Length: 189
Ligand code: GDP
Image 1: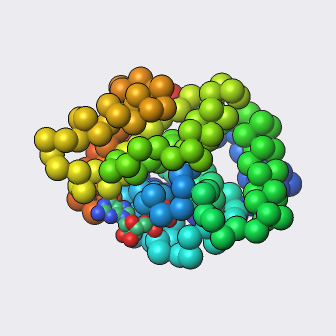
Image 2: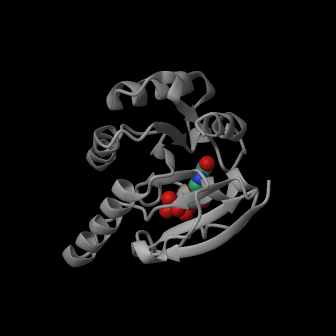
């Protein structure tokens, strides 16, 4: 796989002019989104890991094999965001999800160790409302004992009312689960 950064955008005029299918990756700050993108694309620093939570406020577009685009959406749920920056972020997301026609699915990251948060649920409800297919990725699955992994995935599936077959566990540190996620994504084009 060849993954390349294309551009960052805060508004519609900055979205890249392409019709390639887009896969959007979302999750709350610190869920492991940068690590997930880097592991999925086999690039150590494609998405920057360890940046100040919630600091990146741009849509980042990555070209994958000149076949599809991965779009990294700013992490949400960061308490220290000001009201005005929250509003800007909300506007940017609304515009993108409502107007970008080539979005094929959203990959929502959820920490495998915990119940989905209120913010997670609100995001899922929004994607259901605008009819964007949802793939759930449970991150940091290495931190859940092997015998409890299925149970953790079932719990997330139940909390979010998403079929279990659309919920995949991954570990970026142990490089587990990525082929399954890629297969699922690519079957949606
Ligand atoms: P982001 O804020 O969502 O982009 O999260 P990061 O990718 O920066 O990861 C947040 C923290 O979780 C970092 O300390 C990572 O090292 C850690 N982390 C990310 N993915 C994994 C994983 O699969 N397993 C474990 N054990 N830690 C992880």
